[in-house]
Image (cartoon, rainbow, N blue to C red):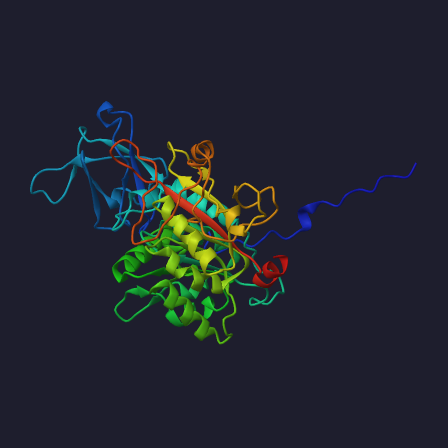
Length: 435
């Protein structure tokens, strides 16, 4: 019987070097942002909301409904430690410790809490809806391999049109963060003559040319774009900032400018695109021209008729896009999205049927095997029983200057919600051959 070979111990393997910028948050330091949760020691704070501090500063403080906490009382403390407010006296700039103060427990700020509690200029996409959007893109960014050129492989580029509050921007940047090389340590901050710290723009621009994943965030309002950029920079010392390029522009001019700057004609460069803006259908042609084959285009609209307008534009202009699914967000607090059945249909009578054949409605994937190629306002003529059954699925869309609202009404106030239309770019030449 042969002797078993003895496995060599793994002690001789060299451990991976520690990344200089890696940090496990155990204690809070200057410029951190902290979440304060009232403890249950005081029953009056049972339903009190958490408080998000500004970046910790030696002379800073946070005013709570029950008193004031100085930032220097937080710096150096650990996660889940407890601090107590002082009594806030009228006209008193400081605060003294008091047994009557309220206890707050220190927590590390999570991304979901950060985007909900930061100051907003516009209504944001809520985290539960944003996670559905990011999941629909099915992102799988790959970091560079050892010995591989930084510019090797296809770059992942995502367009976000309608930056808004920056919620989706942060979630997308976190999703692609691992694909990009680490920012050079000496590029993060340099000392100036005035003693202040500022980023080395030259080094950062050089690093940006090596990125393997980029988010192009386009916003037409300079004020909203600047605010969203500040929101992204304020989370965890701006660790996700440099994955994003912020642009103040409209979508179609931005894509045309990108085509001109890249000197590659009208070659597609986007892997995914997301549109959250008025008149979405007017930008579909430009976005489709920049989208790679099999790339996803997700549009967010407050009403289902706006999704129908997008589908109508795709059919009328013969754009190389296919509608995969339509999801309704914010349904009874759900997060996965309720799927809607939205299809372009046309009556068989418009296909010149044989004499004596009763007209009926054809949809995509019908029994006839013929795919519908017309817009959804084709004027369906059905029997009364068919009309009753189809009324939940088909809505006649007539763009004669009127816009119909077709969304559920919850009591007297509709909070959040909306619809996602998920399109997929197909190969136009192959599509024509199949027809």
